[in-house]
Length: 239
Image (cartoon, rainbow, N blue to C red; front, top):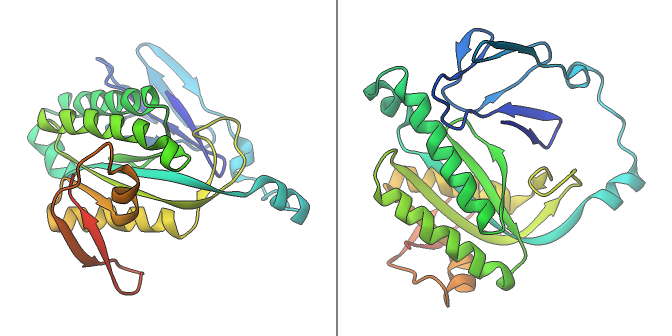
């Protein structure tokens, strides 16, 4: 799959193919950002990826267009990330690691989309997904969290999930999933993912998310931690 992301980015994602995908002669083990004139090989076929505008001058941004295209919306943000992906890849045979990672991405993508969400960005060994809306989107988010927890319990690969909810700046995109998500809440959920990794937490939600999803998902033990780049301490809950 070639996934369009905000900022004129295109990423090749191998969803667990048996024979693998190759970019410029190297097998794709994780989602890979494409550049103009990259060669993609799938099976016995070779393709040239063309995106000349990516290396050209930036298109001027007009104030009127910016006002029309960027809006503030309530969003649920979810980041999932394979734990110790480098070590994980080394433990498996060279041909098996990309298949395991690809199957995991395919399963997660299916869970998110069947729960009315969208994958916004692939991050090498993880992804950012989102749902537009506040409390009305909570049942869909809860359904995804329960299915992701079941997937975690299968154990391969081991991965963490963090969830946050708040107001996000959303830029225009061709369809859901391609919009540009911006603002402090987006930065916060990525810092949460780093915090979960350092604290050994497989599942973590912010206080805002826990309060909004409470009728649908039971929150576990609360912890208070500082978040890099943000002042003070914040309350988080396991789930």
